[in-house]
Length: 290
Picture 1 (cartoon, rainbow, N blue to C red):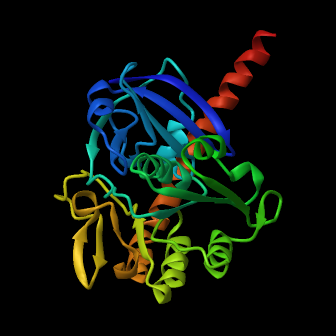
Picture 2 (cartoon, rainbow, N blue to C red; picture 1 turned 180 degrees about the vertical axis):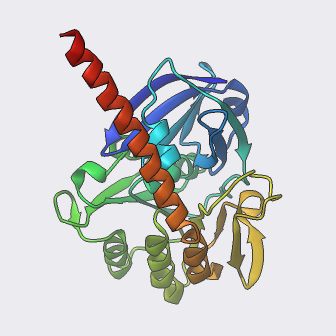
């Protein structure tokens, strides 16, 4: 089991965890991920390693509570344990001095973009970061991104902070201004990554995306993470998770990610109902004692 040493919310339903995993902290590289299991009977879910601290033997992950397992994980606090953590998995980001690199993070995707932006900066790139969210409270890790970037542009869908519009709008502004862009990394919801790919393709700008499909074992054995890249089937957990954005079939990726929506919805409803019952039972016990 792995102990949680720090847990705090950094946005609505978005929680940062530092977890003891010294071997993973020592070996992990930008772009790699872990597979975590909250309890013995729980499902296995992939989460990108946002950062690590080898001196303390911890890894940092950032979790958005969307489904049953992520909401359950976000109920845990410092001092609690998770059943197991496996990693580092996947291929590390390809890092070199491209020149001017733009790192784009949409929502919690910024947590995935951060370690690669940091590595790009350390490799000598001029790093421009565009970080987006639905509104100001969903823009995360701005301070951290500023430390590893030469320029940072927050964007919000509702205009509550920074640029009013999508990350693609700000990217288009940069391109239209005549800025020479040599490399783009885009991470976030599938529609956002697809939009970035469609935008950059006519300009011939090298663009990479990090995919996060359904995964079970993280070794390519289950086949759950299949995607189509360059008209060929790949297993994201071992062949990726990063791929040439202009070769990814986002339509198939979207359909595969929606395969179990009904089951996921029922699982979440049952889970929340169970915890609601526990809460009201505890509340009634307190009232009876009073």
